[in-house]
Length: 128
Image (cartoon, rainbow, N blue to C red; front, side, top):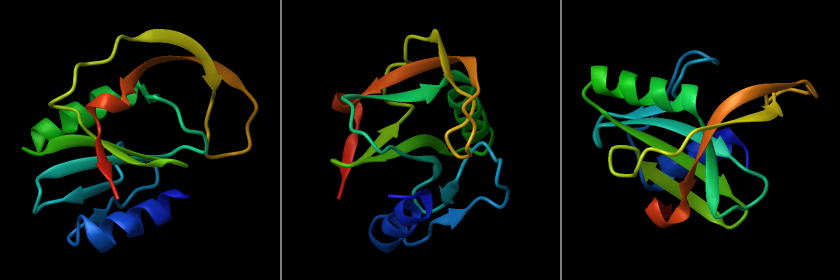
């Protein structure tokens, strides 16, 4: 699944009022005013019991949502389903530094150190 497919799926069923962010490099992907949610989308090609989030993404998502009086949500698709995390209701991840690809969206093999954490699927709401 690609991010646009995930957006369309969510808009078609869970969030009819979903609006995409305007910028390609915004720290969020969409907003649901009706549900008061500030949402980051991520599509994974492999399923894991713990889903990765970069600390910088987490901090921006939480801070910007708070400024707008919205709840920060991190929604991931994997081959086994769609999982939504309300970041106000899950424990903040333990952060660790790891060598990671610079980006997953473009064809770059360059690796850099990123500070990342993991959100366990036990804390997620499964989205059909």
